[in-house]
Length: 546
Image (cartoon, rainbow, N blue to C red; front, side, top):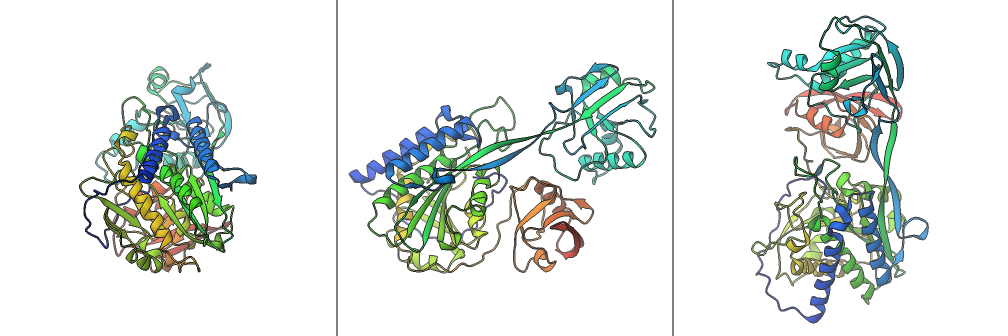
């Protein structure tokens, strides 16, 4: 489950059900054994956490496609294969295209870095450290900047650097060289409008060596150049063609965090460790495979079935969003989508299962009221069709969704999410429930789609207002691309549309989703401001009231 999108699920209808104590039949035990085998393989150390675009992901996708092929599904990926590939933007690498020489000595690449939003330029100059003259680089002591603003509660260190860079450029500086801040690290995915001059940071070793005497004049030679970094993710897609008019999509993401390289681990320090992701989401992937086996054997041919194991969910729903924009079957013929994410930790005492998307179609009320065998769960229904996993991508295409989830736990996004902690019988009961949902949902016509409330995303920022937009987390450009707009919310009233790119809220730039969330934190209910956004190639602004 994606950390950036994690939300608290709202509890709705709750069924109080007896504890799980039903005797297992031979067929039940076989499915449970299969589930355990799938999870054990996918969450094995040799897959190194199944990070999207890695060798571990390759092992996982080969395993999944082999399973689907053995069951008898047809491949529905690119060019008749099992796989649908898509790009994952990894930011910019400066090491090949940048250099810095001071007084004729080349500074090691790990002792300096340019800001990724710097322009690509080459220059030579003889600046004095203390003098700020036109035509040469300027120097900025970040430690002194922080000290000068120690009592300023509104001081934003990052934005201050951008403001200083623009101000320096307006006064003729050709570059800005930063120093004296141990918190500075290279951000390959830094977003924002391109700076007018290169901005570089040098570490303490180099600043101590060259910047100790502000009266010195230095010989500077520098170049800023970047290469685009990209890896490739792969969705695994299998199809059961029953010749029916409509298709049901079942999905689960199979990627996880690897060693936590993408910054989405809950472990913030210590040595890198494999995050095996048994619950998140080998459990959902295993359920997907066994449901494919069940539906292939099913005698009812009223629907076709598309099974998709998504990659790069942990990066922001990349795989599912890519599929909805590049579908291998007509999206107009999709009845509904069922998503399974973290279905392996059904608690032995609470038996709590959350089912999201209940409000995305009126058909779900009849479906669940007709399922009388409810011995194994206390079901919490959540109406929203959006949230922290891949069903959100399909909801955005006006497709009814359901989302099955057994809850967060202390091993979430940590190395301790291992296969021996999975409740395999509980997982099997969820598979049974999903099969019954399919059987009890009318297949003769497409279910009516209903819009629902939006889930608020999680972020390190704290805010009490919302514009009512769903950001496109796969967008790598400057700004926040709008993937959807909620009816009756401030963004809708201001005229924003899906596809617009939000650039600024009031005085606060919104180069990324995190900056957008931080900007929201500057406002409270009833505040009025302007939103600057881009529609196509045209920059626009509108008044907005929270």
